[in-house]
Length: 193
Length: 186
Length: 149
Picture (cartoon, rainbow over the protein chains, first blue to last red):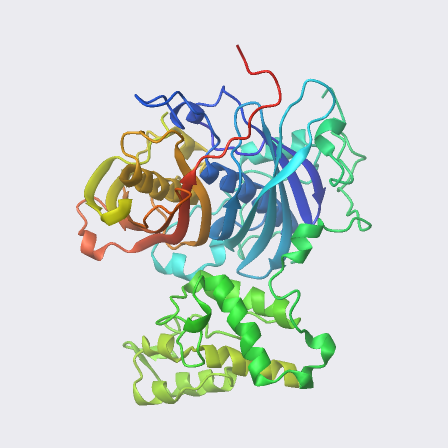
């Protein structure tokens, strides 16, 4: 199982908002465990909400990362609020709309809307809002308590890896991350915060 | 690279500008004309509350407390009645370090002012050897804290210098003091 | 790679009316494939996997044999905070207090995850995550399109 919970970025307004989509496909392993048949019911594949939260976290994380020149290790630190009203099933497409709410030195916050697009035989499937996910991110290089815990982290920005660089490049975004580059206050990034 | 544009059936009415797979060279430029999705804008906490536009001098302490209460209920998932002026953020309301940033962001939105890092909550107190020695806040440390944090009541810390006491002195009242002072200074 | 985040149930204390308390363990093993992406060179349990571990623990208490007509899923999460990173070789000790299901079959839960190091004493284990969440029956809209045969 790869850890990539968005498939394509469809809109990016730098420093403001990002929209990404994720297809729900029977090719994905976790759907066969969530849920398998039991003695009492048939198999019931549904997209786990935890992975929908991750899809929004990756959308918001890339938005925040892009806004800071991919010089920070942007990690999810708090799910302020997450609500999902309906499930997504194989064949559906999820659309994540993340809006940057606050951006400070130690971290950032995003508001998010989750939409469901069900495929139809003719024409375009309509997008229906099915959830809201509000998140907070910390910049790991700047988190005093993490350093205090004696946790050694590599210098390079492992958060925005090759997988994200590929995602952004194939979505048409040219100023994506450069995997292997250092991050944090010590790194010479040359961008304005 | 084959197809360049996202198919219309996924774009829907509210997405606005889509990004071609091969844009013009250079950065994606901000689409300033686009409004934010209506839901997201409406959902900023405090967006509907009385703001500074109505005049900072007009906000009574009671009104400030009301806004602060809404911020804390939102950030800490506590009940309205838990948020009294004396309630400590860490002890009584269960705030942790990530919540401090959340509270700071939400106060900025509710009151429409900017909070600098370290302005609201004492940062890295325990790590600084000039402020804390052998688990106790030094005189110099106490003086620095008082100077930087006029909104905090340090009486309890004067009596008991244990650095763990710092958690006890951050109360809801502290936040109300901060907002009051910040609004008056504007 | 399986989507199973309860490796062992340590304690199960059913309450009256269907809620109760459950304590489980989720080991973090370098064998878990997704760690290769999260993150390259610095594998840590993703925060949402801590949430999933708490969700699965709650489900294990509420519907251990999958007898409900519709599975219980996570519907809501609030104030879910991450305090510590959990690495391969370490474990997450999950404790969930599960409320009684209401008339709609929804249960309010509070969960905590503690970072356990090998040979470590659970009493000293620091908090890795905590939050409130709601379990509810899955909601699927009837499909408009013709289902697969």
